[in-house]
Length: 197
Length: 363
Image (cartoon, rainbow over all chains, first blue to last red; front, side, top):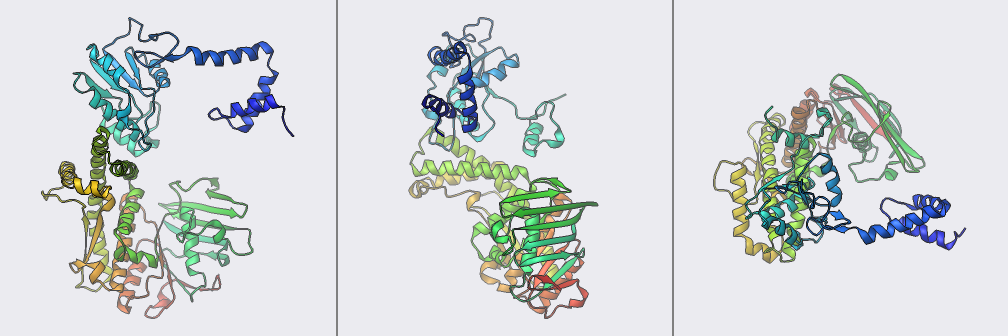
């Protein structure tokens, strides 16, 4: 059986979204079809709005709808420490920890095996922040993978010469985790990074 | 670890076998093509989920049957464990331990060390065989090694890409090169330490299964030169850095990485001369058996129990004296062995639990 053309188009578009397969796409499309007209229009509008109104902050690269972003323009946040993350989504969990410094978002993943060279990265905005001379510590909050390690080392060379302390997040055990079930590599890192109690 | 019972259904040429092996040496005799190796293969499949002969599950199923079933009861440090595998041709495969569905990373699964005639290439073959031998054991006993090896291979691939594209002047090449050296040295240190332990065990075993007077030695062969006799992280790192610096032109000419653990070797000596060149077939076989047995003991000293030893047709090419010594060593050992032989000449067969195999049946 052939579905009506507009419905088929919607299913095709939904299927392009990450983690959505043909069945989910069909279910979502039928759900959207049954929505009250006002709801459907609102959904369409917010999709257009998100594209039009959200952009990276000109200072830190965080996603925002006003420039500079709410973090950069917040006078109560300390400029002494700068936390470097790969994606804006990484800010959300770090914010929950109560971290009160500023961020720098690279807005680009880095895959060692792809052709990308970290040196192609536009580091001017980062140098701009560092040149102000107010930052005392840069925290590298990249993923504990080879990709993250190469990127961290590259950034460390970029930052060196600015007379700031460079730190990275500790490796170790998750809170509430069970030592019995920790893998030996994580546990070894945790032992190496142990602290006086 | 000792197998107490094995049940095989519709596997290769075996329709039905119910075997109750003994704790020590178990001998399986029979002519060619009767199913001796298939029996070992079934035990190997129970331990790892796959064959050591690169066969698919479809290949393993008996002609005209619609799947195979394997089951074993074994003891592990005083516990009794039952494991089973059921494969049917519609491609469902189920592995259970004590009636619970599980996978082959379960720590209670059957563990085996296998020796086939191909393992002779451990001495004769290319260095990659010996690296694979070291890597295989080290990966089993150390998760850290396994992690470092994967990481090293990724970095090596990237480093080679840089060399191929002549991008060695990039800043990121320097970063990758530093990471390469750090990881290379971690692997080298772990391998050298392990070879020390392995050599000691291996020489002891070799002396047990060979007449006095001959001797074997093992040495880990680095791919770069070091000046100091003391080996540690720092010495190795600066030596490898220096080596790379010295051979920079050669590397950029050949466009690939020319030093590192991916090119190193385990040198084996027979009476102080390279075994590869000077040892006979039989002697090479005995050295490679000693290395496999050393693997078994290394496993024991780290995990606290012995795996099952599967020996496929290792006695051919050994003289009667060597046969006797090996058999009596296995007979008295603390681990359980399954050994297949064609020719029982020179073996006092009455003293050893043995079965005769004929057209897929045990007699």
